[in-house]
Each structure stands twice: as C-alpha cells, then as structure tokens.
Length: 72
Image 1 (cartoon, helix red, strand yellow):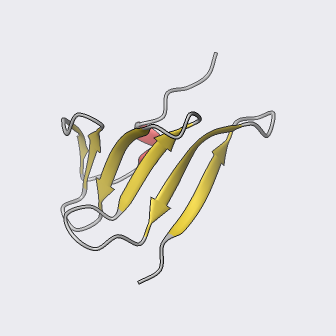
Image 2 (spheres, helix red, strand yellow):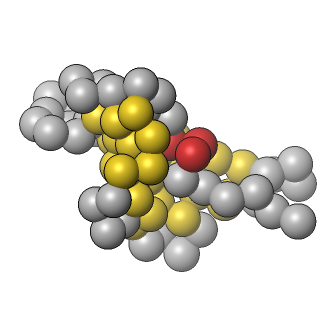
C-alpha cells in the first residue's frame, strides 16, 4: 500500500488544501486544509463524503472538493 498526497491550489497557485489517498478501510481519502488540519474524509467503497466531525456531507459523490470551501 502506498499513500499519495495531492495538493489543491487556488487560482494564484497558493495551496488551499490537500487530499491523501491510499488508505484501506472505511475511508480512502483524507482531506486537509491549508493549516494541515483534517477537514474530512471520502469513501469510494460507500460513495460518501464526511466532514471532520463524521457528519455526512454527500452521498454518491466521494469528492474531496465538497469539503473545501471556495475562497472569496
């Protein structure tokens, strides 16, 4: 098993978050914000996205982008 980290950048190339994939179990991706705090997780197995408190954010779309708010 190998973990992979992908950085999410805004339009000015600043890092606003990251997604770490490669986990085995109830989640496959961990989403972190720019301060490296966990903002949630996604599950390909269950097709869900959860926030950092474990609350369901979305079903049928395990998309880490749902956890990162848009910058204004």
